[in-house]
Length: 146
Image (cartoon, rainbow, N blue to C red; front, side, top):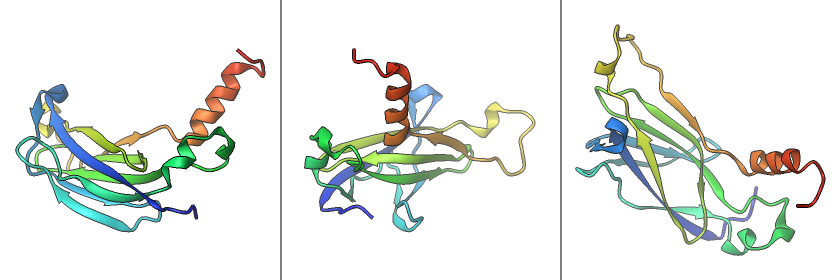
């Protein structure tokens, strides 16, 4: 496991109608890579949670290309639930030391769909990971320097 000496910050914003309306009273569960619960929060009238302090690798790891084998951030899973809306699960949400990230969750009202499923499945949102970004760079470069 990587050395986690820094602190990053995370806020979740639950919205609907393409970001036009905040979703108040949504329950937000944040878990670490091991699946352990880190925090349980609720959104306010603006659809925002309080700012959450989370462990993250030191900032210096993200400022040097020599650390290519070390992921310079921590990842968390964010689950957002609210009656009357489809649930949202955001996986691999990155948190960097000293940075406040705002993760926006677009909540879709159940009434927009007909017929209604008895147990709506959560939307799955995958944030591109460090390995995926590195693989895409090497695949698009064709081994040549640009």
